[in-house]
Amino acid sequence: MKKTNKLPKFSAVIIVTDRNQLALQKRDSKPNIANPGKVTVFAGAADKRERPIDCARREIKEELGLPIKRADLRFLGKWISNSIFWKKKLQGYVYVLNNIDPNNLKLSEGEKIIYIKKNKMELVKLDMPDFSKKVLLKYLEKGD
Image (cartoon, rainbow, N blue to C red):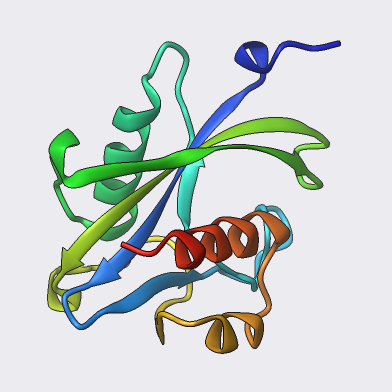
């Protein structure tokens, strides 16, 4: 059996705005990317030897132009994801970033930012990959 610490890693960030909404990414519809056209949490692959929390910080800076500190992120948990795009299992580290002003988010990857209320009814309406839906539902279960 493959050990989870040997799996390729990625980090994902659940962004909660200062208006108590979830900020999600509507992915580009390009066929050569993971989850084209779907709504996802902000996420990306970790570089070799990069700590998951630093990967999360880098991805938020790259995708949204928002510099954040390690202390800004709250660890939610880690999950194993069966990536259809990468055709292998990946280990995802999920963080929560609270109290973000949407005016400070400048999207550089993806089609647009989607803001939804923090409830399951809003979430299930969206076309999301399993991983994003799973971690968001877990976040909503746990609460802040």
